[in-house]
Image (tube, rainbow, N blue to C red; front, side, top):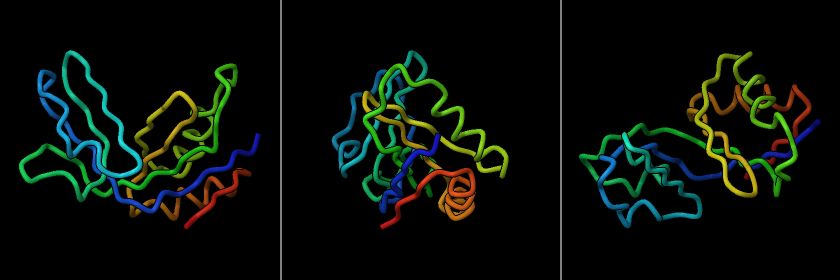
Length: 127
């Protein structure tokens, strides 16, 4: 099954705050943001440029958005995409929403990820 993925232009950071911290306003900047709270952490994916100094973060992430919406009855979307990336040794950070999935890869590995996904029959739209 060939999927269509869109490469988002922005650079993202994955941040970690204390589980009891309020969600900061900077987390919501940009067109894409993800906030997840667990008993162990508050995890935020947002524009790297919005994160203030002093926040625990991992910078240098680019995002590929799977064209959706994806029906909940579909099986193996993330498994298929992550297997392609694992085969070429590209690690990923996945974010799922109600309508679709996002694959975040290190900016330095974006070209390798795009080439591998295209080679596996997926359409990648850049720009």
